[in-house]
Length: 209
Image (spheres, rainbow, N blue to C red):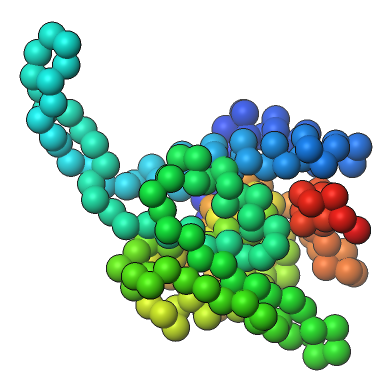
């Protein structure tokens, strides 16, 4: 069964509190999401393999650690995933980027895909799927299922807030996918919003309603 990793660094928790505040402006919310995403990236990449290279410092030569050549891709679930994508790319500028567009069909309750674009070499890359919220889990499961069709080396799911229902749903359908989040909130309301949550992350990120 997949592991759930909670990122409880004081800076992350402080910035999340500011994001939760309903009066936080669009600009501030956007900046906070980018900052939180950068801090999440530190933890998500903690197990990246290292190797040694010979370098010359101003005083001597030495063997110094660098990242081993590991291909990565960040796949954003549109549209709110773009907020996390920007922050992660600050730390992983060489990562390739993919996008999955999904929306919920109000009639059937199912998830409909309207966009799917991946790097040509996605099969050789380790993938981070990013979305600020893991609520019901339906979009996350649909995204991961679709991504597995193109066969990346590995998949991790990265979010800021999760609901217990979403975590359980994703783990049931994709037990091989580890989940990274700041916190798991209390529950979902009747409309499927995470409570206490931070509202609609996409609307707050882009200043829409």
